[in-house]
Length: 513
Image (cartoon, rainbow, N blue to C red):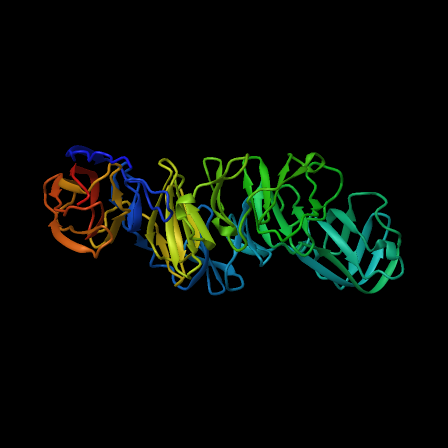
């Protein structure tokens, strides 16, 4: 048997410097600078790691169940609808969906809208019951139905039911003109002349839809019960039964794919209708031009319709296997670093730059995560459960599970913020046990802040190695003592603002024994 000669062990020297953080990583493919855990940190100053800015509680709001914005903050507080803090109407209590069409902010599933010019809440649907209806070829005169001008307007698509003498008059027609008692149709031969008695109903119906959105000045929606996609008449979210062959008509189309719709949204000039494994994309500018395309892609997870956010024409959303970015081609997974951690029941928001995501994992733990689009990094802020997000200009607001409304970042530092950043293990790619002669941190740690450093080597227990107090000096340099090891982990915990500028480690390598 050949005996191999023993090689003389030589000491090698090396030096590496981490000048940027890489964000949270709960997966297995780790790189230097990844964070195993974090609390209240931010990548806004990338490539540096810094504490997030202070949040600001909006004290005028409490007990809120739904939040959005349309020029001002809009909130549901009990059964009151608040616009800029003032009560403007009543709705049912609970969570809502919102969509803005013209000056009307649609509130769903209530089927009402806030007229932002008059600051009044009005119903989308309307109906009138007559005891007598006298039909001519293009008019109908109603008795016992009240003032029709309070309920209907020119351009409304109305459905008639209850006719027994001429059942052919049980149809849908479009109103050309309306007076207190007379409705005039847009077509000359709309009805069969005659008189009806009993209960004859004239209704402007709005379909039951599970999800809604706005696109190109129409209200769009989809129904799981009917497996149908709907669009309102142009500029009028209250009319879904206007079919005159015009470009302003409403629209409806049944689909045949398996499964329930999970959400819908606008992206550029298209409207997207999602299922968990299917995307229906609607293209076109008016009904005669509409075309629906179907794609088998990673869709929107059930219960995550509020996670959809568009930033610079890229849609971010939660699917079955993580968080995706979609810009018109195949969706791209951007949460591979989450490992086996799944996010569901998610709500999202954005400030035009960062994607905020609040969701619960399979262990029942809530996470508020932020994806910085410029650096493509995730950070974990805390374990806050957020119900809704709302954006006004550059400012982002969120509604927490306690019914309180917060400004996500005021722009000021928080002197009392508690934060943590734990790096994933550092390995050297050369064999042998390493002796770190220098572990140097460069920090911006202002007066009043402090930092506690802990180290764990080769999977052992955490060992606190010291505390650093802030000073008036612009940059604080901290030398970290560490024992001989094959790998080490570093954890930083602190109070008050802090920025990690760089992390330098110098080592020598010896034998394994």
